[in-house]
Image (tube, rainbow, N blue to C red):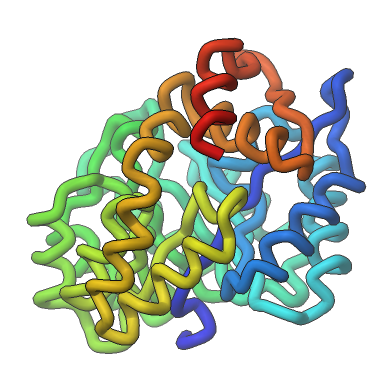
Length: 287
């Protein structure tokens, strides 16, 4: 799966002022990120506000992105949840034509044991017609995929990697040290990208790359080429900006940045609310 090496962008879902999906802006965003050099697109992830999208909207977003990308890059599609049977039904009812992999977040709210997490992912991987990427994001799910759990799941023939957003560097190192050679360790934290690449990660699924596709993909490519000095200089440019992306929750910050760049509106759906004026001003200043 070398096609998932480099920068994947976790696409936001643009909305109009009346909260409808803005498909024109979505097409604009796809072109903006691809012209910026990202290696692949991630559709219907957390950054897409997927919990507030209807089944019909998700299908149309997938169709529009697939059409606009026009086979220029691989596509990854997010299907996850805390009801394993429902996740399997969604996989079976979704047209995954042209999708290179599924990205599936660890079950949230239920707080399953590690055994439960293993059984959940095994059932999903058995059902999926395309390869599966694990997604560990304890800040949202209230449960962590331990290194041992990840390594156990890495033995499944249809589980090809993990988006690791635990923020736990020691855990990521433990995965890198013992994973199968072809198992993909992908950073899920923009600011940890170069660090994880230094010990074996193959890239990043990024929030910042929505608004800064060229700079972020250049940074990742420098790191993958072993030029960590050049990669670090680009990374340092994001030190002040990155915390603002999450200050009022993701994707509130990055949508404010995209609005400043004229790509899409800053609108988000409840229970998220648009960035405060103060946050917008600080983001605009850094832009």
